[in-house]
Structures are given as structure tokens and as C-alpha cells.
Length: 394
Ligand SMILES: *Cc1c(COP(=O)(O)O)cnc(C)c1O
Image 1 (tube, helix red, strand yellow):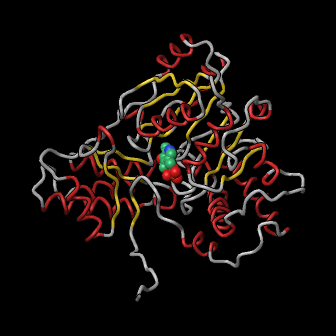
Image 2 (tube, rainbow, N blue to C red):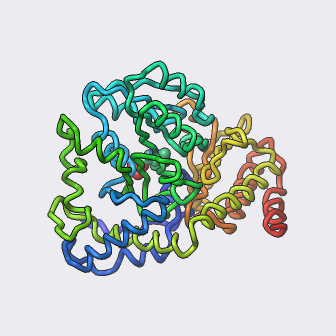
Image 3 (cartoon, rainbow, N blue to C red):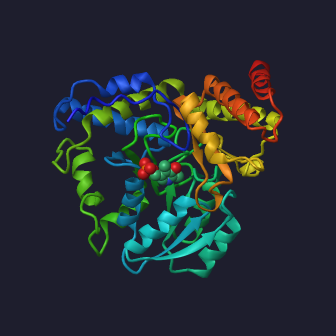
């Protein structure tokens, strides 16, 4: 055996996540490991919870990172709120609504699906019809920012509709947290999950969640025990909950949480509104360059997610070949289309630390050069300048 230490290449991550990570976060993660019940660590966990309340714009007591990726945050919401026999209205306009349906069914519930096109926002009119047609439903589930298509939905309107019909809301904010306005308390969102590796720019593997009192009341008054031991909030709360009497549940991923703490400190330093504005501005610069090149967006302008740009592949272009050249020659990682959009779009992520002018100009220059060399039907040599003019006018 002569396997050596692993040294990954240095890439620019402009796909659907993970996103580029600040050296500050990586450095924080290399600090000494201490015990997860050490009082010093417990104090840091309390700071993480407080910083997450800021990121989510909530005062919810139950706000914490699940020790597993975004998919586990999703599952935490469903296994705690859905009991056998429950009817749940699930909106699907991309990949992740489909996973919500799977979750409902594995909890023994029935999912009533509300479908919208991949690339469109969730239509509140269809949701209202489904709520009226299913008066026994107690949960409405939808994705705020659909990373598979680059569409953002109106969470405030959907949440108000759900409450009018006596439903709680489960919402996926994996790609919206810190990238787009998200007001958990003001919009009365009940069970909210996110991920560490998108606009928070931390390493993958942690899932911040927050639960309203209304959601928590359902969890604590369940008739059936939660099917998952690991995700049962009644047990997790003894560990992450306040009050000083912390009981062992599982070993927290100590160093990963140092990273999340640092990422959240960076967000607090920048200010959440400034973070939202930065994501929008860099999206607009990228868009100016794409449009100068003659490329077009999948999603209508008023439903576009700034941090995930889905671009139609020009006619006759081998989309996988373009991605391979970008990766191998530019160390630039972008995303492909999924499901019905496979082969039809590229996905350019502009998330967290990676949402910056350098990445915008680098990406436009690289794509321009690669498409031009393939004789693709674009306007060559103008994209970078267009974006630079955009920045200098700002
Ligand atoms: C990335 C993502 C997830 C899943 O997160 P993982 O950390 O990969 O498990 C869920 N929902 C959305 C919208 C995402 O973008």
C-alpha cells in the first residue's frame, strides 16, 4: 500500500453547492478539538444558536444545527410533524419537492401534490385550491429557493394561506438562508430547515433548523413516537435545549461547529441585509454578462433566485463538454441540469463567500473563451466588459 495524504485541487465552486469557503472558516475548523460537554464548548453552542436566530430572523427558542446535511434537516421537520394517516400538501416545482413527498409517505402520511413547471415559482392560487379541497390537511410543505431550477417562491404569501386553513408550514430554506430575504418570525414560518454549505459558506454536513411554538406544540403532543430515534426533537432538545442540564444524545461534530460559528460571525459582521444585497448585485453583474453574450435564463425575471442562475444551453452545444473544460482547464465547477432539465441548462451558483466580483468576471471570461472556441452561437468577447461596466456604474 502506498496511499498518500489527500490533497484536493483548489477549485472555484460555482455550482449548486458546496460554495467557496472562507479561509477564516477553514482555519476555525482546525482549532483544537475539545469535549462536546465541556462548558467552553457548551457556551459556543449557545452562541451558534443565537447567531442562527439572527440569520433566520427569529426569536424561536428551538433554533439549532442538526448534526447532518440539509437532507437530514428536511427529514427532521417531516418525522416530527407528520404522523401516520396525516394529509400533507406538498408543492413541487423541482427536485426537492419530490423528496418532500418521499418523506411524507415514509412517515405514513398522504402527500397531496401541487405541481408547477420546473423553472417557475410555486403558484399560490393552486395552493389555495388544494387547501380548500383538502380541509383535513394540517401541513403545507414547499421549497423557498429551488436550487434545481433557480426559482424563488413567495414564502410569506404561501405561509399566510396555510395558516388561514389551519395548517403549519414546513419550508426548505437550504439555498435562501443568508442569500435572499427570509423572515421566519414576520412570515410566521413554522418548521424551517437549511444547510451549511450554500449561502452560509460553511463546509457541508450541518443543517440549521428553527421551529415555532405552534410546530413545537405538535411535536410534544404526538400520539405516535417519532419514527427516527436520532431526529426525535423530544430527545434532541435535552442536548441542544437551554437550561444548563445538557444530557448526552450524540457527539456533536465539534470542529464542524467551530466552522459554522465562524461563518455565522462573518454573516453578523457583514449584516444580513448587506449579504442579501451583495447576492443580488453580483447576480445582476453576472446576468449583464450572460445577456451581452446572448445567453438566456430559464426562469422569468420576477421569479429568479440571485444565488442560482439557470442558463439555457445554446443550440448545438455539448453542455457536458463545456463543464469538463471549465473544470479541467479553469478549475471552475458549475452545475448541470437535473431531471427534465438535464442537458438543457447549466447552473451557476453565486453563493455566500463565492458571490463576489472576482468570481463573476472569472466565470464570464472562462465561459466566453470556451464557447467561442467551440464556435457556439454567442456574441464573443463582450461579456466581461459588460459586467465591468455594470460594476463601475454602481
Ligand atoms: C442542497 C439542497 C438540499 C439538500 O442539502 P444536502 O446538504 O445536500 O443534504 C435540500 N434542499 C435544497 C433546496 C438544496 O439546495
